[in-house]
Image 1: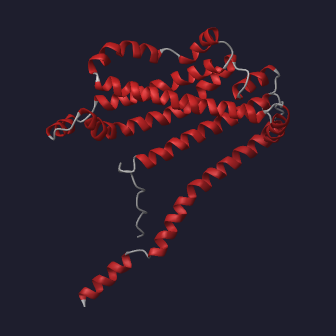
Image 2 (image 1 turned 180 degrees about the vertical axis):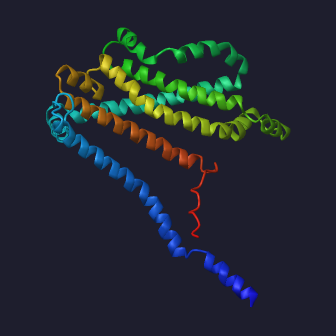
Image 3 (image 1 turned 135 degrees about the horizontal axis):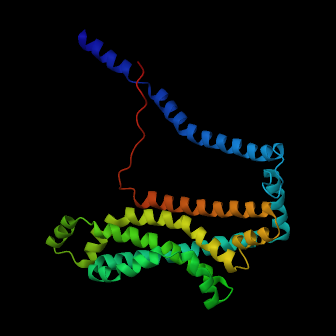
Length: 286
């Protein structure tokens, strides 16, 4: 009798599976729904508050002004060509900067003596504002794609270098000694121990670099570009066309978000073995 009561009580304390699934779906949908609501509120405020306070359009254009200006830019200013130029150069600079940063980080991590020798120069280059080199690159290479590409590579290079090098510094030496005890070669130790250990740091650096790549390419286009969204920002500023500037900034933001999401997707696939925090259980009902 007591066993049956205990069993029934235990079953009664457990929420039905359908109810649990419904609660999980609601919690999962609440976050995007709230984000969408915030976006709608911001857009409505942007559309109606400036006219209410008599703010001129050349100071803060309305959302409808941005829409019509975007259509005009598509038809008359070759907006698609500018967008493709900026997006492609951002991706290329990100890939090259990430590749060079990872190679340099792993190389210096495997050669600690050279890392100590070069660390002052690496620190100096890291502290120096990379965007300030853009005018110098224009003097060297002219008004073409090279200055903005090199600036983007430099901006992406250092966060990845620092993250990878930090992972190599804090490497678990017991794992390396264990691999050596099994007579593993240096190549196998790097591929089987060091590389997997450093992958979270590498992916974190790539996420940072994905956002910085857009900044680097924009600076290059602002300083000396003749095509790209940064050039449209400079051109719109010269024409006092604030709507054009806002549209270009919005497209740059979309490029950065897309690159960040792509890296985050790859990270989720590559680091599937890394344990992640789970959502806390729902509070128990009294």
